[in-house]
Length: 435
Ligand SMILES: *[C@@H]1O[C@H](CO)[C@@H](O)[C@H](O)[C@H]1NC(C)=O
Ligand SMILES: *[C@@H]1O[C@H](CO)[C@@H](O)[C@H](O)[C@H]1NC(C)=O
Ligand SMILES: *[C@@H]1O[C@H](CO)[C@@H](O)[C@H](O)[C@H]1NC(C)=O
Image (cartoon, rainbow, N blue to C red):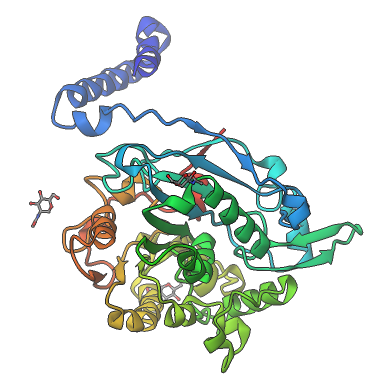
């Protein structure tokens, strides 16, 4: 606040150098700020953010010996923030997202970023007041839990197990499955083994990773421990793009082949389907027995941009502004987007029969919604049945209300979507401050 005031006051001290309009603008701005600071907007705009500590990066010990390494051979890492109070024995384990690498070239290039190397990872702060936030008002059910943010550096949703040779002759390591195993083992030794409650989560590709491992994670705890899974924006659809190509299906096929993704795929699915099909959540959820909550916008901005209308499918640029913001789409385009929603609603029908599962499928144009306070639990968050996402997930998790499975009506019927800022293609990076 102090710094902002100083900046605003500066122009006033040199009024003669500014055209009069400037002075007026500044005066108006000051007035608005003054009103906001004292008026009814005060709590929202000026509430001091809770102190967010830096959470150090912990590199997995013994990574090389276990062969549990990032694409470039460096040890993988995670950020662990200890819980307190009644959260001291409750654990939230979040798997980071960030797409997939599906060719030798892509995986090779991933070594130049956190996506394939821990050399680029730094301490983070659990900012944004989403599910990782430490403020009780904005994150009532999980604020004081142990929280782990597991970094993603294998390119195949923590599920591959292979090696390949890059063009320059160096080795590419595809050890996602070993990373998952070794990180969970190490967390167990750090207290996870004594958890009384555990929530296993992930966003985007991280949510798919979580789904692939959900039952395995559950199996590591005694029956009496409450273990649940929460997938944020990981319900990727096997949908054709507007030119008729199954582009995500092709991409998954390449990832599975290149990185030797096998062990994590459900056996009952593999018995009568291609591995590629078994990598899609529509198939995965049929086999998952652990209680799960599925959060996904039915107009998922990542899927609209990359699955339904990838650049290759609409070369004439007619879709660019619609993909940028759904408000720019005309009625014909909205009908096409409705097709994606219909597919999602249809694929989720099996969830209706799963008693202890929950769903929050809003009609907003966005992607991950649990990591940012704007969508998780704020006065302007998307709501279904008048509940924010934090309330719906919290009620499901704690058993306060049973089996809430909410599917929103079609775009544009939910006015609570309007307050969301235009989405970008996010992984968690946009919400977790990186130093
Ligand atoms: C788990 O709890 C037991 C009993 O309180 C304790 O002895 C043990 O050190 C704990 N394990 C970990 C990994 O914290
Ligand atoms: C919507 O936009 C697309 C692409 O520019 C165009 O082909 C279509 O005719 C438009 N439809 C309407 C109803 O304006
Ligand atoms: C919706 O919830 C808010 C706060 O959570 C409450 O103030 C409001 O009365 C509720 N509206 C309806 C229609 O139930």
